[in-house]
Length: 318
Image (cartoon, rainbow, N blue to C red):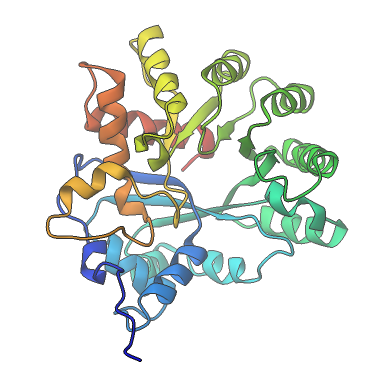
């Protein structure tokens, strides 16, 4: 039997064309180790052999200023320290990370809440003391998949919030189809002025508005999922923001790589057939371009990128 032909696009398509914006990119939510794992799984004969080469190959010259890497597994992956320690000095960041500022957050995803215990928390607390750590997360509630029992999700979410608030760490929140419980727990446990990133928001616009109204330092995370025809709620959130104020949009831009390639990117990839097997940080400008189109005539991809960049500084200090 002949070898089955792969329908994965050539690796060269991961090197993106001229983007809709040339402003500095800050990807506030990426899973770098997982993204590299997907890359090696799809491109077994790929050009790069480690995470650092991957970053330099795809991001150098692409205006990537900073990334916030997310570690949210239980038990904690020890690899986090290798990455973080390799970004401690400017010299190392120039050599290994193409000059990109590498930051990270750590927590336990609601899918794995059932695995949270004292040992996991001890490992997270160790990571919180690292100079490259800027937040606790992602953590929260996910009632779409219910991979952990809901009562356990709520208990673990509350426990993590209390530790993060005690330490003054920014919060990276995952919430899906759990509006009422997420809102209740956040308002009960988190000071009004705390810095919060609601990651990859896809829930109701009314829920987003209640959170924005209550927490003045909260921003909504926008990924490539806003470009999907199956998701209209996130676009409504953007329209509401733009209509209510002439000021900055209260958003941060993120990829959630390796997931959710922006659908509008494919218009720029001439000659490519099929779908890219992974998302990566250099795709952020296409999400910004779509946001600008949704926000209205006064908005450009450049303006969206600038707002999101300043909000990343507000929420994470990066």
